[in-house]
Image (cartoon, rainbow, N blue to C red; front, side, top):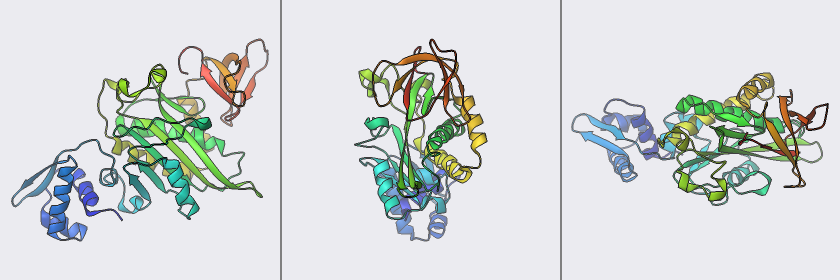
Length: 336
């Protein structure tokens, strides 16, 4: 259950006027002493709250924090019942998978300020420092076969781009298959992990893991990632962005995705084609089994109706459709 502190914070964020202690007490169903305690705790967390006799409380300064109160200001109280916000966790995907095994419903969300064991694709780690990024996992129960489920990763990339646009008014792009870019630098990774019934091949649960670099500085990235990775802040002059707003917007977009699946495939494919900047570029395709073996090079021509990448490889007169999971695609001229 959301704490009094978090619920009062949501009230403060959504009010441009003073909120009296009496109003807060009645709205939250708690004592005036509990309201006073919430104010003290919020101030200790860095929130600026002005208090005035006979007027009440008003928020004067809001730090960039990921907590239930700041996220809940943009979502309904009912929606927040299935959102868990943690200060630190090994992996939001692992935590969410455990909830799924215990019968958690579709739409369950796990968010953490920091991950100690963030997961990337093909067993890689995902850098997840505290206080700068958004690390979110979303539980779907899509009742789909394993053959179709790879498309959800592409749908998710669209949802991330649209959430960034709605929250911050900024444009982002997609590198096939599921890296979200800003100014041709990676700002987001997506990892989907499925559990399925072996006999029928039906998905029983799908965890969509999303890691977004928001307020990192250049010094936060190791040297080997400087040429490909960035953050929304870096690509926008060092401005600080409120992570809670993007978290809430992303939850809303993922709820829509879950509702749209699979009937609205055409709409997501159209959007994916608009956002994807891999097509029209020279690429190198590495087989995922062989790892960093000698790649095949060619031109990314188009996107197929199943989100496959149509490529004309050098020396070939025909095109080949690459599927997610079969290859790793890298741009020859920039991270596209």
